Image (cartoon, rainbow, N blue to C red; front, side, top):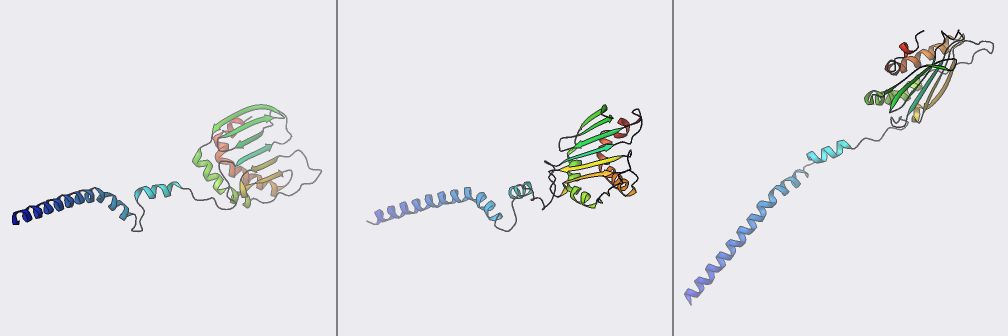
Length: 201
């Protein structure tokens, strides 16, 4: 009887030892998972969470221009001079390209298309609503004044930057100053398409 009790006790001890070993094995396997889970509960994002959060772009501010849709067109009409000296030009800008056409009374003299630098375009469009807002309103000119230069400045699908200015510079210093401001605003892109070289006479 005593020997039988000892055998039973030994079996119980062996069974408990096996179960304890299995439990320890499972716990060891779960330990890395629990460590990662607990790390995410300390208020600090894990590396993967931080990467996902940084990949989400902040929503655009109200009135901000969208670089993927904004388009800009500037047309400069030269003064009434002989054809060999006349250089009107049109430049169009969007996310994809800058495109220039130079003409003399409708006869195309030069054309150039350049891929748009993404970073430069985004920076330009980001500041565009403020740049447009800073432009003065052009003044009307006397009906009898003709033969001077003029400029059209059009922004479409640009949110708060949308505008359509027609500036007649005939004997009008105020309007000429607006034209100068627009040319300054467009300078990075007129340089890109070599405006000076393409309009030389």
